[in-house]
Length: 225
Image (cartoon, rainbow, N blue to C red; front, side):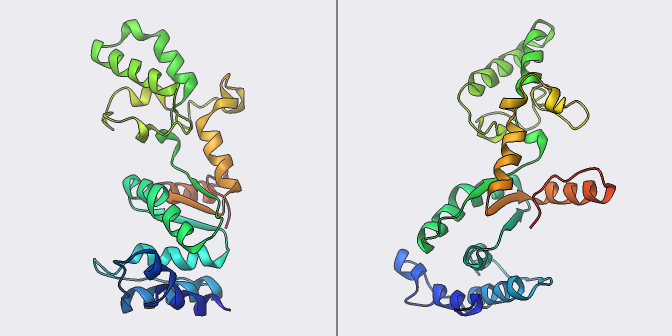
């Protein structure tokens, strides 16, 4: 069965979505959008869709993306939406569809804890403001528990906190494979997981950063799809 034929069945009144969720209601706009996405995946090219609130846009593009079996990059406008897609919407839908999909979350370098820079900041802690030092201690406690190193996990940390530049890296100050903590590097681990995944959830900032880097001929930030 073709992808274009499978998609409407998922959104049908007696489809898997309706069986999994008693509150599900078929929406013509959602089904039409999902079919259009499926056709674009199959035939190639670009698709621009404008849909209002309540159409169900997320599932309209996720269903054909998952059913296609293709490697897919999903990009969101904000990190909050990125986290929601990865932690809630994607796993739920993959479970409903019964698909064993490998998923990965990938953000920009500045979103991940750098263990080496955190250690450097700790060594200079006496020169820090007392409030900054307290936040740094909180980051250190969290660093012993986190697996991903995603700073978004650290509740209560203001995204404008002066601690963040102290414990994250940039392309300019990253030591790469020369770093003494390279084997534990959260950025390297996240990129490695993205390379092995079927579905990679990114954000627009990272997407366009990758475009710029590729055009410069320097490197690639994202896996090729």
